[in-house]
Image (cartoon, rainbow, N blue to C red; front, side, top):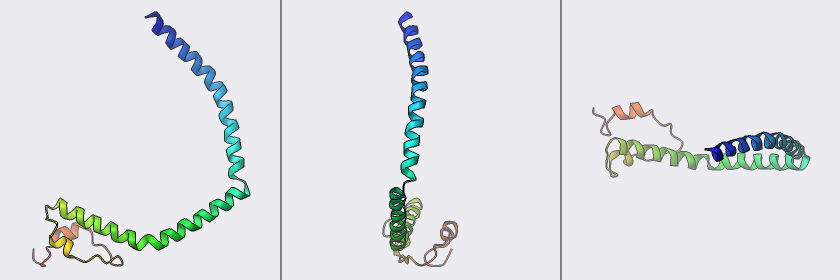
Length: 114
């Protein structure tokens, strides 16, 4: 029991001393990081990467939308207990078409009758 208490006291003392020294070191590192972030070279790189990310998002958005729509249709079909060759997958995926709400799609049957 005594060794457990000594360990806890030692850990507490180490924590207190470490946090005092650690806080000072943290503030020093934080200052360096802030200085580096504000540098013109870093900001030029950030601006360039933002532009590249925007270009990528514009060029890939249609393909991504098509994959998301297909995944949702597959998930809805499997949650409704439909086989892979079900009418849900027979609908062509048009990435430009609006996606109907899931509740409305669930009320309709593929043949148009309820």
